[in-house]
Length: 315
Image (cartoon, rainbow, N blue to C red; front, side):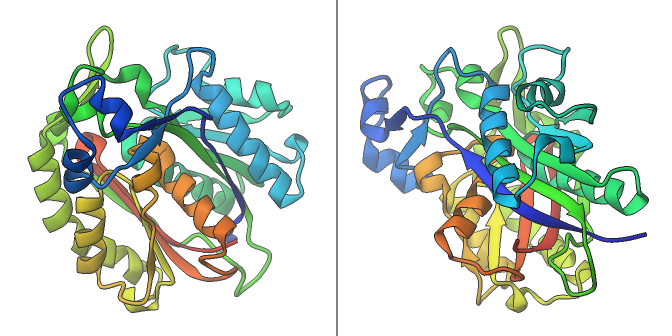
């Protein structure tokens, strides 16, 4: 068995930006109310002619170009999403068709906000087992499609976007790698975050999610570091699911990553669900906030009250 690594990252966001002032024209809210409660200032919103697979394909194409690869080099496509409209073809097959990937295994992963870290672990396992050589792992969501824009408790949170990673076999000891995953869920509390109904609508019990995230998740995230053989103080960066700045900051502090850059992309992108971690991670790399080989904790949590985290080496 061999290990795997992230060879490259990419991200994409729609051009339209929705500000807090724009939202104040739709519902009874204000910039002060939103920033003080969730820390979000802007979010990107896709148009009706921008489906989820288009967002995903843009991010994946950028990751492929950065890695110096072609679609023909990929034999596994995994798309983490909870906002697919159709059941078949699945999102991964649609993305593969857009990119021209010739004959990949193509699967969707629906673990909502923890979807990308689940999909990344799945790709790592496939590479380790010899079932895949190179994988595209994508988190993409169009939350604007499942949002009630008259509900100020949810419409202020969401944004649209995609992030992608190329995962391949690690060529040798000491190369950037994907560490062991620590994952789980609290099924009996799945009602705390929901996308359900016809038409599907996003809803959550905000206080329950906040208490769970800030009290139950820190020791779990520390255990993910232990599985990678690192102490939290060794981390160069922490990329948590970008749900709410009031969750991200105390959670990062309680993990004990005292020397780490903490991703705060939620302030400009909102909650993009499965896209949030690869989107924020790709931006950190692009901005030079982390260096190749740096250890980075990725930790997704939320929908289904599921979680998954692993330490990766920066590409």
